[in-house]
Image (cartoon, one colour):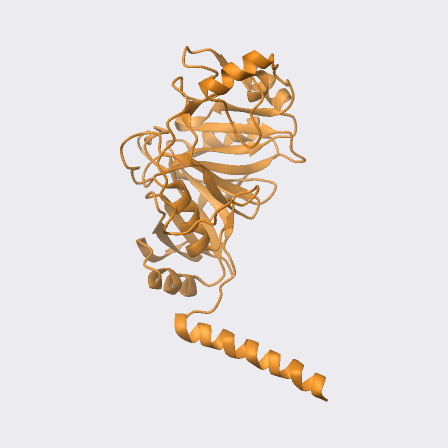
Length: 335
C-alpha cells in the first residue's frame, strides 16, 4: 500500500509541476516544427523544375497550394514563386547562402556536372587555384571544413595527399542559385540550407529557444551557449577550399536541424548587417506546425518579430516570422 501511494504521490507532483509551468508561461509544450519547404523566387519555375529533375533525378514535379514545386524523396519541398524580373541572387547579402543535396556518389556526380560545365570553382588558395570537389584538395583537419594558410602549409610539410573519395562540390543552378552536392549518402535528397549569421552562436540559441530546433550535428560545445556568452567575434583567419578566392571566415560556426534537413551557418562574411531575405532568390524556409494559433501565441509572447500575421495559402494557413539575421521563416499549419 505504501509503495502504491508513493507512485501516486509522484504522479500528482509531476502533474502539479506541469500545470504550474503552464500557468506561469501561459503555454503548453508544443511539438517541434518539421521542415516543410524552401521557397525560391524564379522567373521561370517550369524551366527551374526541369533543371532540378534532370540533375537530381530522385526528385519529382508537384504542386503545393497552387504553386509549382519540387519534392524530394524525404518529402521536403522546394516551392517556386514566379516573379517578373530576376531575383537578387548575391550569396553574401542575406542569411540564406546556398542549399544542397546529398547524392549517392559525389565523384560520379562531379563528372556528370563537369561534362555539363555546371561546376562552380572551389578555390584552394587566394591565388585562384581551384578544384571541383573537396576530395581533390588537402583533407580537412578533424571537425573543421577547411584549412587556413598555416594549416595548408602544415599539410604540404606533412606531404598530405587528396583522398579522392567522397567530398562536396557546387554547381550553378537556375536564377543564379548555388547548389551543393555532397556524398556519399544512402539516398539522394534535399540535405541542407547553408547560411550566414551576424552572431552564429546566438542564432543557434534563438532557433533552439523559439522553434524547438535540434542543435547542429556533432559533439556539443564545451561550454553551453547562453545569452551571456553567445556573442563571439569573427575569427581572423580565412580558410580554403572556398567559393571565394579570398577564402571563407568559418569561426564561429553553429547551426540546427529540423528532421533530416540541416541549417548550418558561418559568421557574416562582410562588415554590413545581413539584409532581409524577402524578395531575394532564397526567399524563406517553411516549417510545418499542427496548431498555428498556439505557435503564434507562443512566439508573440517571446517577442519574436512577425513579418506577416496569419494569412491563407490555398487551403491552409500560415504566418511569417523573422529569424535572428532577418531571414524569413514561414510557419505552415498542417493538421
